[in-house]
Length: 110
Image (cartoon, rainbow, N blue to C red; front, top):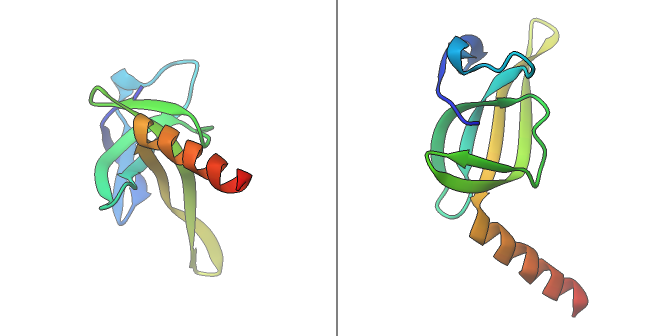
């Protein structure tokens, strides 16, 4: 599901797009900047995923399973118009995500 990206969509002044051979004809894949948010935050690079990614979805990057904690779409005001500037997925390892969910439930019950 994850893949590397090549030039086409603007991201920090660079143009980025998904490799043609890694696109699925049924799905539109878009490049996302992927960040593992477990302290300290670690960048996992730019990967291609379907546009409708949501929190709680499982993704595999380089053989490691992660859960999506947040999907961030940032916009910048340029020449009186808002333009997309960044698409980012904040992820946690699957084990860490489950532990955090368990601890949140314990906190709510107390």
